[in-house]
Length: 187
Image 1 (cartoon, one colour):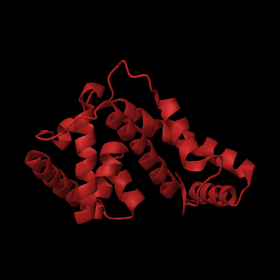
Image 2 (cartoon, rainbow, N blue to C red; image 1 turned 45 degrees about the horizontal axis):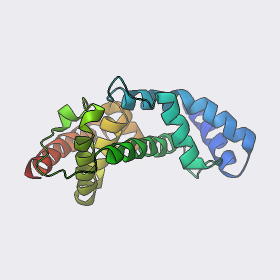
Image 3 (cartoon, helix red, strand yellow; image 1 turned 60 degrees about the horizontal axis):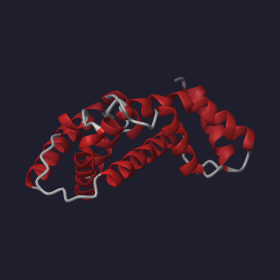
Image 4 (cartoon, rainbow, N blue to C red; image 1 turned 120 degrees about the vertical axis):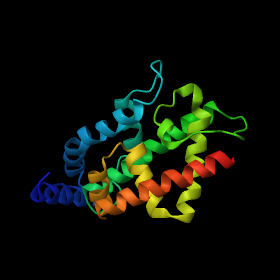
């Protein structure tokens, strides 16, 4: 996306946050495909019988986030980051409601976590809990995991969204994977 397109979207976002309904509709239409890509990536991890579809996930996230209004965001990247986080919370809430049991002794590596069917929702919840703990120790590494694992972003996209170097994203990813593996193995 060019700088001028980003600037146009940022202007639309700011106008929408100020209550311009037309700007809100134009902004959502402009970023909807990106939101749908993120939701599709998230939903690809669910089992085939899943009732929630990517479109419904995007729509639910938009409704929960905005309640009819666009929240204040710095730019398109910030908005997509907030929206991806909301979709993650929706999926985690669904997983939590499916697994109310104890999660002691869950063994799950970050590499396998991407293949979790809904029957293993307790592992997804354990990963989310571990990610919350990682954020207390190293928020930057937790951000990288959230973007790459839950958002489906590439290293390059993650670096752009977080406004850091590609090398930092890769270092944080390596560290986070090791930290999460240790945390989940010790549970």
